[in-house]
Image 1: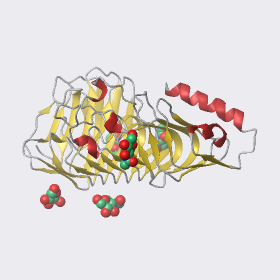
Image 2: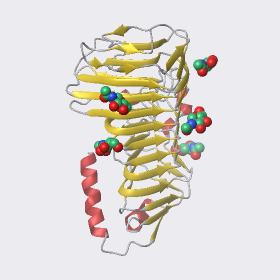
Image 3: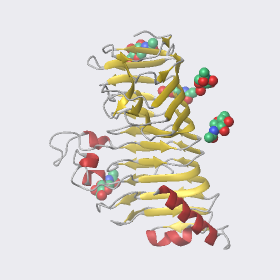
Image 4: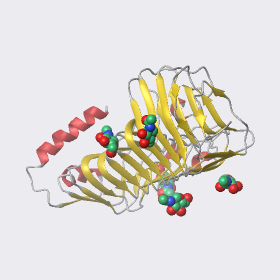
Length: 361
Ligand SMILES: *[C@@H]1O[C@H](CO)[C@@H](O)[C@H](O)[C@H]1NC(C)=O
Ligand SMILES: *[C@@H]1O[C@H](CO)[C@@H](O)[C@H](O)[C@H]1NC(C)=O
Ligand SMILES: *[C@@H]1O[C@H](CO)[C@@H](O)[C@H](O)[C@H]1NC(C)=O
Ligand SMILES: *[C@@H]1O[C@H](CO)[C@@H](O)[C@H](O)[C@H]1NC(C)=O
Ligand SMILES: *[C@@H]1O[C@H](CO)[C@@H](O)[C@H](O)[C@H]1NC(C)=O
């Protein structure tokens, strides 16, 4: 799907470059988009995106986008993405305006398995450059899919706090579900200074190299995860630094699915992260995904996982502070965990764990 979107954008770019692009395009409704994206400055004013339509910006290389008003997506039970942006060397200034995903109209406590079709994701970001200052309120399911790089995501908020409460359709459980903040695949991506309050992964990286996740605040979701569930892929050279987790299921997780083959997760550094109130695990490394502590597979190598500086991870008393559930010979040292301090919970299992230095169970 994404490959064809990229092709489409290339075709559109090719047809537009002959016209003068040194102009300012203005968007106040979807009708304005086609002409506005011929310009290298695009100003978006507040408007409502009609039901059953996507807002798609295939931008010229080098475009600057300025958002000057709030955007609302009508609830129309459409497929996502509700918003797609592509282009190279883009500067996207969200200016902290609100993008309203109308999540409460869809939430039923069941996420992807519910009866209602939910638009998913809200935002599909396929640019290189910078993307900043976007405030996304109430995503029906996944908030952001990030699938290109190099890219800096800075100061973006996902506010699904309302999804923590039950609604009339959710049978007493949290109405929001599968509301991942950022699902990431790509090389050279930085996610910094973001806030995510939700009911699933705060940030999940599924493939890519040279990825930095710095200075983010994650509340009430499932923490930051490196998730290897595609065969023959790499997650490598990852720095997770100075993030704060509050009341999340777990803070720091590496999960690989039982059936994935020929993939690897390597050179991961966790530094200066802090967590309080983790309800299930502080740190979880598991190869039995989707189960947390099921029968592990061994088709993904996890190597060179470091905790440096101070990572202060605190859990509730019923949670496991650290659990490792690896397949035979697929978790490979060095694992230098001298920068990990845990408290509050129970000592977790450790299955097929390599030798860990600087930290004892
Ligand atoms: C978000 O949009 C919904 C309609 O879909 C509206 O009822 C709600 O008031 C909006 N919220 C904000 C904060 O703008
Ligand atoms: C990752 O970063 C290293 C060191 O800066 C660089 O040599 C390598 O080409 C980068 N890899 C990718 C895929 O961007
Ligand atoms: C780390 O996070 C704290 C807040 O938790 C902030 O005050 C500090 O400036 C951050 N440090 C860096 C290097 O970003
Ligand atoms: C482990 O990862 C760190 C940080 O990415 C890197 O500097 C180091 O060379 C790696 N060590 C090995 C043995 O791969
Ligand atoms: C870790 O955080 C807890 C609160 O969550 C605090 O009580 C404790 O002093 C911190 N430990 C260190 C070593 O900073």
